[in-house]
Length: 141
Image (spheres, rainbow, N blue to C red):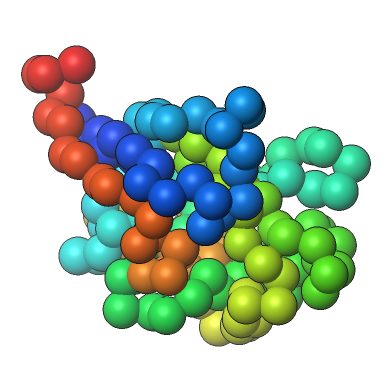
């Protein structure tokens, strides 16, 4: 279920996420999805060849790090020596691969209890701590 609420991400500490000042986008908007009393967001991970791979992530500030599924890890060809990049609302975020946890039991979600959309990541607090999230309702856009 998509709602008319959008969230604005503002970077507060770009050095912590590895973006340079020359190419850093300082803000962007991304729709959050509310389902099963939880918040989800679509992330666009960047593969080594530069193509994007979309994944639905559960937003959980209580989880200490980024967690991804084994399938997503394989698709991204993660190397422990290179950061993993993803985009949310036009903002690129880089996370050190060595800090990412793997999990295979995320499950599914979907509107009105129809669990047809696979969840492939958990966007944890250590990633979100570098950003301010501001709610903007659809009527204010």
